[in-house]
Image 1 (cartoon, rainbow over the protein chains, first blue to last red):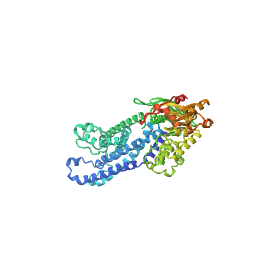
Image 2: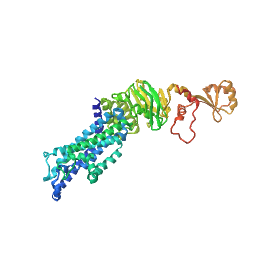
Image 3: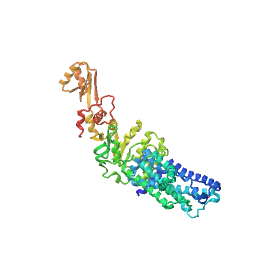
Image 4: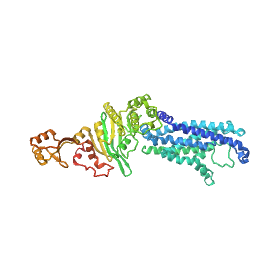
Length: 257
Length: 317
């Protein structure tokens, strides 16, 4: 079966380069460590918070505070998995071995997404439990309403970020270009667009703004977001589909180089 | 068997490959010759379905590359030696290719052994020399035990031992009945390995001929003679029915002549000879004359070689 062959081949490719290990472990460590740090700070500073913030305090979301930085490592993972093929010239060898380009892309994305999901779920659960452990009296329990959904959602969010990055990298073919666009976008621009009043309404449909909603358990005060946690994740999925479809069309049409 | 029919590739206005039609047959080494930029690599990429032809068609054993199931078991190719992720070991590089085409993993060890890389199988490819990279690329081409092999400039950057090895490998692959298609920009290299020649220049087919025919037509042999008694020798040779071409300076070139006969004639008439040497025009020269008009990047140090009529005679061969 051709798809199985391609998946096995892509798994060999992925496990045999160092960048896979360091990007994914960085995603895990940064997300969990930063989440714990901010959880610990929140715990110690809770008394000094304005009442407004105390009321809407979301211990689950606080333990995911490292996600904003940790997702950058997921982006690097997604970009490198694809751009490695182009920067090394391996793409010509790969496409000569698997000339059905849709199948090639499917295999690569399936393996990378499965790996990102596994690491994402471990990261998400670790960030939650370790974050709650240092939140002291303010902690949430995994059994609380919406919490399990948020923790699972954290893993899905990281997977989708990696997949979106792969789609962008297939379109742009260059690591430098892809990272130069994705990193500042997700680290800065998206946050700015999502928080400035003028762009807030449009900004919340950006992939990370919409997808990140799944990790919120306690609703923000005065929140008028027109979609719920799963709706937000759905919007992110649409972004991912668009990026991958764009990548597929270009991969299919362009010469392999 | 590789069959090209009217294969064309255009990049905007520029035509890289221009209506190429020829077939590469099994059991022999077919040399694919042309100056740099003639379109050899582009043609090879189109054969592998990597580049889309603007027009025309290319088939592998009657099938389009993309329709081949497990293509590495039909055709193996070495395009560029460094097309390897430097952080991946030789073993894993070959393993991922083998897996994608359902080739058993045991075959990886076999081809590593054939190319002599067993000792460095687990080493990262970035530590490889150019020659080792070339061998790894050849191992990848052999992986699926294909009936057709294609090598793009395989001897480039290799040491003499490596060149010797590749020549013998190509010959033995052809002797096993496989189709071997190898590109080069060096006529001298092709003369040593190829049984058949396909010559292109600026993307156009210039010749599709057997090596033997090419040599017969182009390897002009003559005798070079120098004498202080030039006029007398010319008379003597003319009387004996020997045609002489006047070369530059005081030298004469005697087409197809036998040095012995000329020497005997000179002795008979008591003529002094300063030089009497059989010469063979190199195939390289013949190739340069053939492609002179189509060379894309001329050096401007001096006037280029002028194309001559005698090279045109076999173009249709």
